[in-house]
Length: 216
Image (cartoon, rainbow, N blue to C red; front, side, top):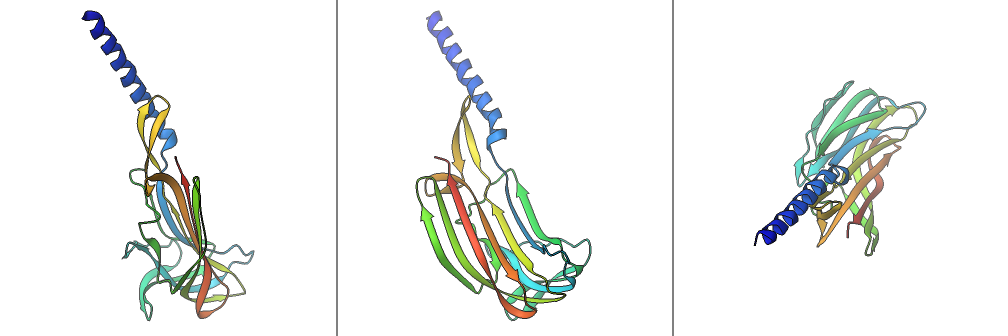
């Protein structure tokens, strides 16, 4: 009887140590979730005296909080398309409008609607799905207003990272957990970008790319 108890204790200790070790490895496996909405220009001569009216970043129908600019003004504006963001700046190089990062929760890129609002057109161009991944490409058109000096190109970009979480199991083994596409855990991203080259009110065209890498 004593021998049986000793064996049980040994098995318990091995499993406990294995579980704790597996828990420590999560720091190298789990990934933070994030989203960033920003405008950029890569021209040698950056656009000067810029006024932009662009869509908001929408989180399941709610407007994401906008960040104050270090140089310039940013505000919400009522337009014929609904609430939009107005930016006034002497120069646009890289301007972050809103950003978020979390190591606590993941973002389900498919079911959580983190996007730009309004989007007037969104057309699926391609979809590829296999055992390893899912990828989708959409053509999008958004209303924007732009005034600036010079002949520049301004990019409006939303970048979303799903993050990834696994559960501890035994030593180097973990259980992929979330987010999920159906029953499949995944890590993925969404990249939505449109290009502004003209001035005044316009429909700016771009692409939305979604890619999920399955963890099973």
